[in-house]
Structure formats: C-alpha cells, structure tokens
Amino acid sequence: MFTGLIREMAKVISYENNILTLEASYRPGLGDSIAVNGACLTVVEVTERGFALELADETREVIALENLKERVHIEPAMRMGDRFEGHIVQGHIDCLGVVTKIDKRTNGIDFFISIPKEYLLYIIPKGSVTVDGVSLTVNEVAEDGFRLTIIPHTMKETLFGAYRVGRRVNIETDLFARYVENILQKRDEAKKIGWERIERFHALF
Image 1 (cartoon, rainbow, N blue to C red):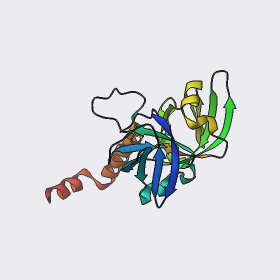
Image 2: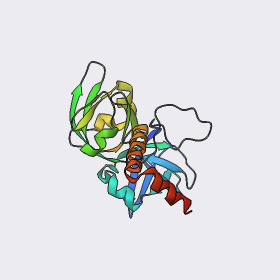
Image 3: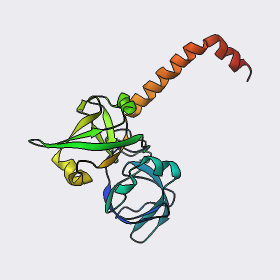
Image 4: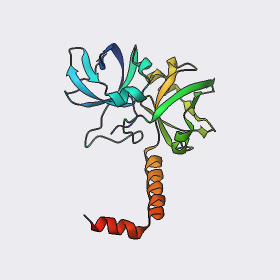
C-alpha cells in the first residue's frame, strides 16, 4: 500500500528487456515494492547508485511506457507503523489518462485530464485520484474527464511542471469508489440469481 506522496524523482538509467534501472538516493531492499509513476513494481537488483525493477506483462499493457525515461516518480511501500498521510493508494493502474488542457491560476495550475468513460464512475468530486503516483483531490468531474488544481509545492516536488497537453498519464481511481461499485454489482447479481439458489450451491461444499 502507498500514500501517493512522492519520495523522490529518480533518474532513469535504462529500460531494456522489461527491466527498469533507476538512479536514486533511496535505498530499497531486494524484493521491496516501489511505486514508479504509480505502478507497484518489485526490486530485482540493488546497485551502487540505485536499483532495478521488473515490469510484468500486465503492467506493460496498462501503463504509459513512453514515460519511463529521464525522470520518474518513486514511492516505497508503507511499512507497519509508518505515519499515514496522503490517500490510500494500491499501486494498481486502472487506465491511462490524457492531459487535454492546462490553465494557470493565481496560486496553482489547473490540469484537465480525460479518461475512458467507463472509469468516470470511480472519479468523485472532492474524492481522490492518483496521477502518475501522485495522489490528488478531484476538483471537478466532466463528461469525459476531470479537473485538478496543482499547488506550487506539488509542481516543484513532482514532474507536473514538465507535463504538456497530450501527455499520457497513469491513473488509479478512488479505492473506496471501486469497492462500493463492486459490492453493489455483486448484490444486483445475487438478486438476479436468487438467494435460495446461492444457499443450495453453498450447501454442496
């Protein structure tokens, strides 16, 4: 589990044969979980300057691989007893978003991000969403996406300052919204099947 608070912007040394090698001041242990641009990956090698992580097939299919260059966001998994800040983040990317508009405000910058419509169900006004590993509060939900306001501190401590219109970003939607929707869906399915049939099925085991 993660918090969506970026520990460091690590330098990408290479990405070859599904292995991502990073240079970073953070020193993990072999087998540790590290979120890279929001995707939970496993450390397979520790080097003098950093560490290497392996990307599984499913991870490569869902994340924006083109952003594994120059610098990336990293956050180590929480440990038991750590202070809990930020939001609850799993490190499981749901879909890709696209930055469609960037507007400067008095003390922040608005980012408009579009996502596939089937995932808008999990984007809630004033709820949380994780963009490239950065957990943020949703300001507004539209028909095809949502709006975030990034404050100067976040712009400085993350890669948002380098984002441009058209950039693809990794999106993890609100954990609780996904759970609630799943529960309601299962309840509706149970009603269609009928509780009597479910009880008979359970009695067989």
